[in-house]
Image 1 (cartoon, rainbow, N blue to C red):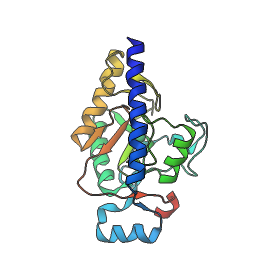
Image 2 (cartoon, rainbow, N blue to C red):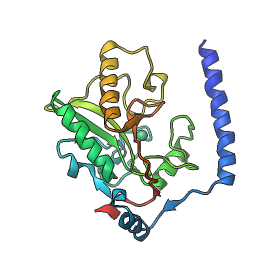
Image 3 (cartoon, helix red, strand yellow):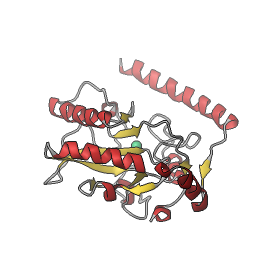
Image 4 (tube, rainbow, N blue to C red):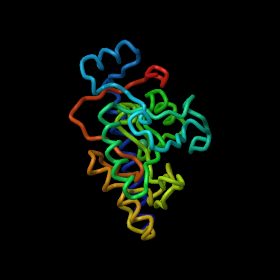
Length: 229
Ligand SMILES: [Zn+2]
């Protein structure tokens, strides 16, 4: 059975790589790389502003893993532990947090906006087409509409039990994986449910990754955090 599953995984990996090569040769990614170009998009659509989540959700907890070396790359990839998202995403998170507060819980953010060049750097270190953001498509983190997060106790900040730690590249990270403890399953379902009701969709491979659903075309950005200060 395991061998069978592995064969499927490796076949899809191979097909992904072939698909990627085709995509790379036919599509050109549009990436915003200057502050001026970014500000122009914000002038045209105020929803495109990148804002600090803490400003809109002061009680939210931050544990920005890539601003430390305690991550799967064992490297500090961000100069500061900051979490930026597009304006409507921050407003939606405020609603999620409000609902969690009544249960004595809070969101804790592991990662939010990620500059495109960091996605490229990550892929070079770990070229996994199943779990990693792909340089040839860009990641929704690069668009400021994706979040990696979990649930914590509002008062103590202690993490609720989940099926796996953040960034565990294992089957149990899949948001529907059935073979986890009742407690972890209950917490995972609570997180998925509250996020879904406020406009987020969970990633099919990672219980901690959520994309904000929107009809707006948010561009990929390759701008450092200091651009938005
Ligand atoms: Zn993510």
